[in-house]
Length: 254
Image (cartoon, rainbow, N blue to C red; front, side):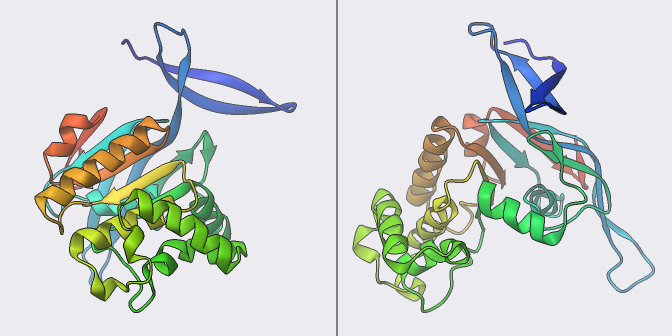
């Protein structure tokens, strides 16, 4: 498959909008839309000293819709910082970020929150489950701001937890689950809003090998269903199934 970068003009209800499209499907003759694009992203911190710490420097990349992308690199290379910016949890010091062709760099906090709620699911390295809440309550927590009632939240959570082979753990708290079970709960929570993008930070670092393989399979299934997957990891197994691997070192894409 040959890929080139095309600038296409898309007419949407009389308004002209620019979209970057890449990759020609030689069989179907179609284009693959760019889901995320960045231009010269930089993130620096001063950390209460005179010295500036650059977490990421001059990062320009593009992530196609329905692709499986891996950020690979040692600890401190900037993977998590970049993920946080791509997931709109943090803002760049300099540079631009586009999502589905739209410049979201200057979006307000409220607009970014809405975008995350509608488009992005997060899988965190340390699970970030809420202690003492039942499993189904943790999974359905993102639905509360949407005004969805308890009965519907329970039903939606149950479907996902059964898919994660945790249908018999609906009322268990995180403290009553193993690390692997907690990670599967975290994945179910990431999927509760049917996100277009899944962002995962070291999703297999705190679980056993058997559960890691299950997580890999789940992410592959999500990709097959049309979800764009972005993973930061040390795990070499992810590189085998990725469409694109970006190597990071000292805050830069190599």
